[in-house]
Image 1 (spheres, helix red, strand yellow):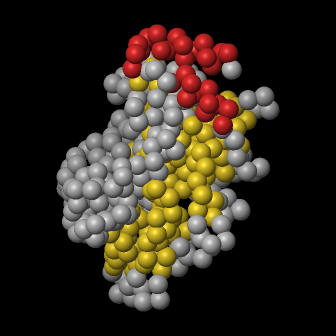
Image 2: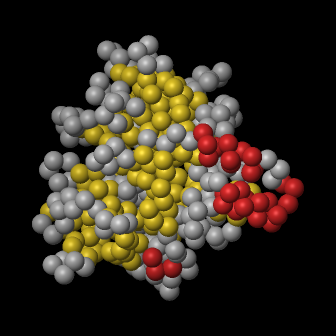
Image 3: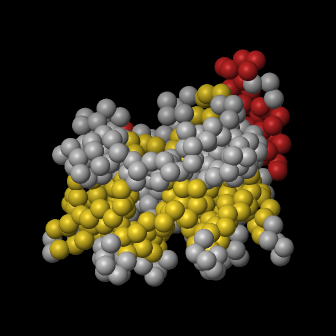
Length: 442
């Protein structure tokens, strides 16, 4: 505890009178945290990658895989074109290996996680790079000597195609790959986004656009990828589009949608919920991540803002007439989190886990320059929501991120370990200011 006090006394000297209560708040928070958090890797920047922005994936080999949006090749891209990394537990700690470094032509800035198909092939997307700098979908294959080779299976053209894919792709049972682009059709932030399918044909892939968003009231900017109900219907969210309201982050509030293929082969989109659809709305808006199912077929997600300004976790329940009913499970209040930017995860007991990009009691965060910065919104939190028998949910902060030594700005959904531990990333913070991989024991 004395080390913590000394460290933040030093910080306060550097920041001056703007930080009168931080030391007291941090010491109280350190005593109050019920869960245990451990930094298992701090990104150093440079060739080892910087600023992870996406969910981690367990490999069949028991290793963790993920991406960094920056770092790697500093020659082709000013801040690096990004990397794909592996974390292997050695018995005494976790060892990071960069298994692939992007060079711009084969992709740049991977803003999604990676998924396995088989034991030796990883798939993912980059937001930029490729022949037209509109992003790519890539495949990584492990060779016999444990190196990895990349194949670009699709490069977005813009124009009649999408551009800037953000979400992690999804396979169906037939081997087709589904995903979204934030923009398109059109080049470089033109258009409102698409949903696409990549169909394998031998060694090549053919793209099919399933749906093109048309802004308000339809939907725009699908940041997140898709999930499937296993019956042929896909679900996702858009950050913008939908209802126009001054209560949302942008001029529009976003939607939750479904896509189902009809008997004629045409894909039909249904808007199952428009955020802030009433003038006096008290529901949240602008979801950055997608939705997840529970065993009963209900959907759950998080948002970046509500009329109070701090984001919420919501539930959508299907009705018999095909409509959906929305319920806010919890609205954040700043000190316990702000801006749900990490997706959600159910554990075996039915509790929900997630992360907020900012919020919490720690107000000194380490940014990508590795220097302490006063951040009045906080460094982010890891939270749990627990239901009771009456259907009410109670929120608890598992970890209040502290920036220094710790991380700041946790991103994307966490993965659960074999013994109930949670693993995730922060975009910034850590020893070098370039983000961390953390382990939380609830």
